[in-house]
Amino acid sequence: LKITVDRVPVPVAFGPAFEGETVRREDMHVEFGGQKTPGFELVRTAGPDTVEDGRITLSGPDVDAVEEGGALPLGIVVDIYGRKMEPDFEPVLERRLHHYLNYAQGVWHIGQRDVNWVRISKEAYGRGFRLRHLGVILYAKLKSEFASIVDRVQVRLSTEAGEVTAWRGEAREYYARRDARLAVLSDENVDTFYSCTLCQSFAPTHVCVVLPERVGLCGSVSWLDARAAHEIDPHGCNQPVPKKDVLDAAGGEWASCNEFIRTHSRGTIERVKFYTIMDSPLTSCGCFEALVCIVPECNGFLIVNREHAGMTPAGMTFSTLAGSIGGGVQTPGFMGVGKAYLGSRKFLKADGGLARIVWMPAAFKEQMRPVLEKRAAEDGLGADFVDRIADETVGVEVEEILAFLYEKEHPALSLEPLF
Ligand code: SF4
Ligand code: ZN
Image 1 (tube, rainbow, N blue to C red):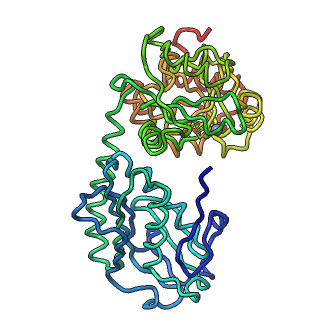
Image 2 (image 1 turned 60 degrees about the vertical axis):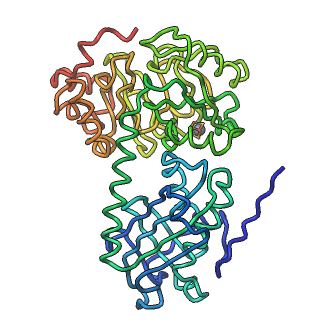
Image 3 (image 1 turned 135 degrees about the vertical axis):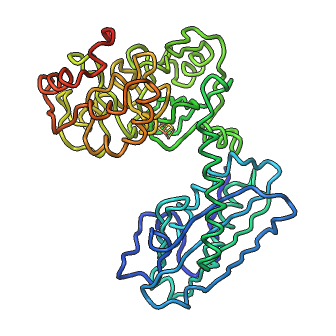
């Protein structure tokens, strides 16, 4: 048993217990980013010669140079050198910044990349918290929690507007490269998927299989993340799932994946087809961001997000539906998904893809609009496809939405019957 103790030399209390704490405007000494000042954060891989372990630098004014309630720009660049560090791990480490900074009492962080927002409370300031302590936190946590891949860490902070803007331009090139890297990954050009069994703590037979084109249903584990997590902790809950011996190419079924799932579901799940929800779909634990559910009368599916409290055409709300499909059981016609999966070329591929979506909450539709429009164009469904999906303003009764779908000539109506 390995016990790690948080000993981070900052003048405020520090630990996961403070993660949920917010710093309200009236309690803050200073804020950064949040679309008010330029701000960004970046973790990047660097060579051994450019990283001096433990070096923390600040250019520009510190927080004692601003009046109470003021704002400053802030750039955070964390350079990592490690013999086993890879650029693909950068986003995994970068996302930890959010957690680590929130561990400090009186420090509040939301967002990521170049849409981050940080506040330091009056109380933390009064106790002597200064900007370099952000670096102290990141150094201590990245070194201890990623010991297997991180050999040296240095943190560069800047509050100087010109410099922050210039650095941010460079950071944006990193972000764009990462997005491009994820975008070109496809299920076809890898030979390994990754499992995630984190949720077995409450859904003991549940196994998520994360594919390049299918994010974990909680929305926070991509294939790159799972792969990185496996490299970082080979005995952890992300394991390689070999992709061998195809049984059903269209449905997305491989003998080796079935074997893995059978073993790791304690023998309860015999087979899984990744590209359909109608036959042997992936199981759902309980933390899916959204839920896909068959609407037989419309020859399609509805998709409802967790935030939507209202009724759906399935005659149930999200929470009622979630209660009936969660827990790690396989329920054909129903499946939990991550929101980003809607943008995947593999989204319900074997069932007819995006064209099967007949209903979704209006706010969710707006949130996903850019992604949906791009995918609809790729699938030849037309730019206006999104507006042919019914929502609660059309109705939550099947008859109401069916009339709308006919009027809009929704493509699901001319697809082959679902069963
Ligand atoms: Fe892992 Fe997310 Fe799946 Fe849970 S829902 S097992 S955390 S990928
Ligand atoms: Zn889960």
